[in-house]
Structures are given as structure tokens and as C-alpha cells.
Amino acid sequence: MAKTSKPLLSPEEARAKLDEQGLSIAKWAVKNGLNPNTVSDLLNGRKKGVRGESHNAAVLLGLKHGKVNRASAAMSV
Image (cartoon, rainbow, N blue to C red; front, side, top):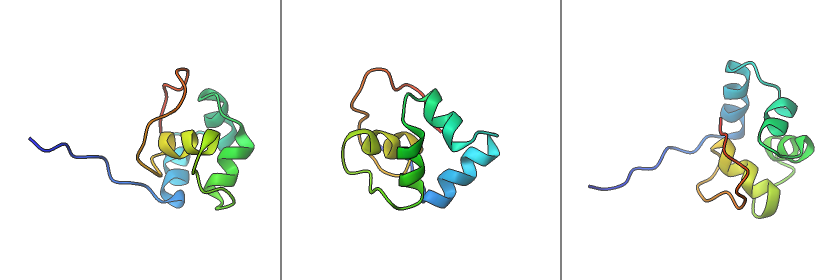
């Protein structure tokens, strides 16, 4: 059986999902052990999510496929 991956979200869709859950970017970031400025920069297009913390945030937000590169990140949108 073929493995199907979840469709990727756009930054606007990820932001809307946070709004649906009643979470601010800052609250979601802290809850996931991320810097709120990094998450904000990612959602506003100032960061691409290529490596490091912005990569982790992009994966957790559903903006890209990949693995989170730290053991403490367990939450997602």
C-alpha cells in the first residue's frame, strides 16, 4: 500500500489554522519550543524554512515535508 503524505499548507493556511485553534503565533511557537520571531518570519516569507529552527517550524506547521531535528518538538498544528 502506498504511503500518502498530508498535503502541504500555504503560510496563509497555516496562519488560518492557528486562528481556528485560537492560538497566536507566539503562543504556538513557545508551546513547540520555537522562537516566536522565527515562526513569524517564516509565515511572513522572510525565512524559507531551509534549515535549523525555521526548518523545524516549517515541518511542524505543515509548510513542508521532513523530519524535525530535535527530540523535544512533539506538537504540530
